[in-house]
Length: 263
Image (tube, rainbow, N blue to C red):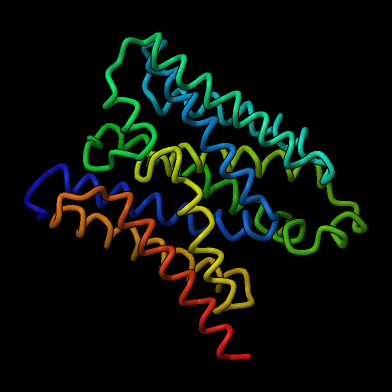
C-alpha cells in the first residue's frame, strides 16, 4: 500500500489534519462552537466552489471565505437568542452560493463531490506542503495564545473578570477555526468537517479532565480514525469519509457507554 506515492501523501496529509483537528477540537467543544463548525463547513463549500470559478485552488477559496466569514458569523451569533437563526440563515445562503459557483464554473459533478466529501487520495505533494505550512501557522498561534485561550475557553467568566481581551481572543480563535476547517476539508470534505473537529474531542473529555490530556486523547482518536479510514477505503474501495465518520462515531458512543457504566 505504501509503495504508492498517492497513499504516502494521503497518510501524511491525514496525519497533519488529525493533529490539528484534535487540538483545535478541544477548544471547539469547550466554547460550544460545534454548530458554528458545521456552518463554516458549508461556507467552506462555497469558498471552494468560488475558487474553482475564479481559477484558484479550492483551498485558496476556502481560506478566503472561511476566514472572513468566521468573524462575521461569530459576531452575528454572539447573542444566544439569535444564534441558531443567524447560523441557519448563513448556512442556507452559502450552500446556495456554492451551487451557483459550481454551475458557473462549468465543472462536472465530480468536482462538487470532491469538495463536499473529500478526496484525500487525490492529494499531491504540493497540497501536502500547503497543509504543512497552514498547520504550522495554526499550531504557532495556539502555542503563543495557549494560556489565554485556555482560560477564556474553560472559564470565560473568570477571564472576563481578570480583564482579558476576550473579544480579541474570540476573533483569533475563529480565524484559527477557519484555517482548521479549510485544512480538514481536504480529507473528509466540507460537509463532514465537524466529524474530526468535534467527535474526537467530545469523546476525549470523558477520559481526561486536563486540557493537555484531552488534546492528547483527541489527537490519538483522530489519528486512529483517519488511518483506519484510509486503510479500509484502500481495501474495500469504499469512500474514506464513510469509514472515518463510522470510526469516530464509534469512539464517541463507546465513551458515552463507559461514562454511563462509571456512574
